[in-house]
Image 1 (cartoon, one colour):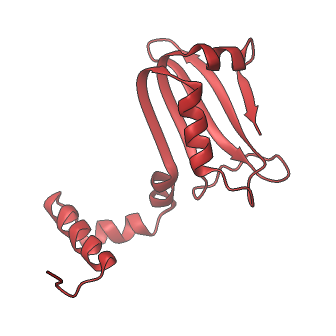
Image 2 (cartoon, one colour):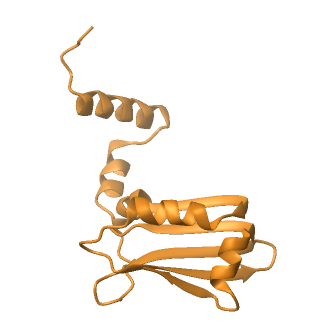
Length: 131
């Protein structure tokens, strides 16, 4: 049965119902939608799991890589006591400068360990570039 609403109209109705159900007020939403925070959240991916693989990383990079804008992806690794490993992945522009604005895709992974492929790619370094 067709109720005459477009898919985007239905989505907006569902989103409004969800936000009202969660107690958001119109003024709060106006502020949120006018801030860079919304764009950052839209383009930010966070993964928390015990073990993270090179295959998972490649899947995310391929999904978000735009050859017209990006030259590579940069992945850094940091060990934090009580947290584990923190991986941060951003794309590089055509001049190999990190793209870190709110409109650029960003991946953060929190894991206890890395698979063998990812360990080999890092070696003794804390950063790798994927081209």
